[in-house]
Image (cartoon, rainbow, N blue to C red; front, side, top):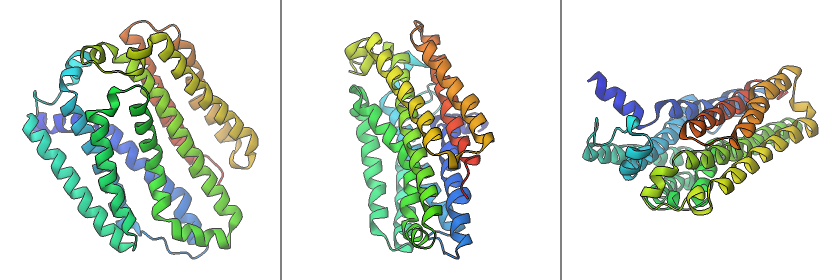
Length: 313
């Protein structure tokens, strides 16, 4: 039973699900909710209902991981055989059943929330997200750049969906305290842009790490179609773009940064990013790209942690 539970956690990428939940909780409890309370505004989602929104996002993400592992079973046997769960610890039929259950639960919760906040489009986002993730796993991820872009947009959307759900209360905040609302909106927009660029950086690196299995499956990812040198150039371009974006943000929006947040930005985000950019062009072996992928994770976590240190008030 313990082995099965561990396999399930690996299948749904439990640490990644925690990051998804933490991202939305930070945006809600550190940025939006304190500002709403300061001006006597009621959020569209109270604590329990916000928890349901997080649950929907986590279920969408978990379902995406499950269908991706089902479809990519043979590729993963080449790229990362030690991490394969489907058809080893969890039967493919059971994996499909989990995928169905995650999607059903998520849709029912999303439908309930859409009626609670009187916003039917909120329910429409769920089947759209599920369909796009299925399309990604079965087709889009095998194409150069397009699959990477979809994943990056989804990562940015993890933050955006909280803002979308609370848009009415945010509009009222904009009327009562435009300066505060502008800072909060700027921080959320900053994080969405950061999530997009850092995800693109890591996605291209992962394609280089997985090139052997992708070639065997006739995938047309960036390094397969254009070569490793071009893929390194594209990854480095996103990395440099991310660095320029962060430096420009710190210089153009000094009111958002305390001394502590600037120190954190330099040592927890920019320094690992610079190191990764140096490593890219010297990478040759699969182990090198795996190290780069882990460095990209550190950069993404550093950007998330920045939300603790930015000056909102």
